[in-house]
Image (cartoon, rainbow, N blue to C red; front, side, top):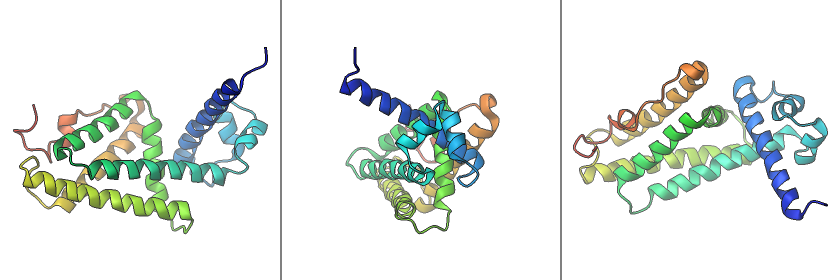
Length: 203
């Protein structure tokens, strides 16, 4: 029986997900310039011809990954702007990262790739947008910490320094996750947030 449009679409999405996973790992480990289309196709377990049917060049694939990162940052900024409890917002966000660490290496590779990309002296619209959203995420986190301090949920301290420390901790865990592989032990939510959340808030 011929495949339906829904089946073709499911196959297309599955193939694209394989390409994304392979590209994220290769770009993070080898760098964008050193990664070839052939490398990505082999990593995804598909032919080069099928690879080119999805992406005419690796720059298109890379820019799509950057766009996904920007969209993720935009969603988080909106979450942090909500009227929900600051301590619960931080806990939920941190727990999502911890769960991603425990699931596989893809989040760690993606996070490292986007950090590398933010440091690139590039003026492409996608990378410039990523840099702006990364800054927006940092400053919204600062405002969230300030709100949490006013409510007595977060410890006293310079909110900007605390935000930098928070994201530096996540970035450091990302590097350790990639370099230590199966030896890596994901810290608990309480450990990751202990510098920020008042002891009486944690259960």
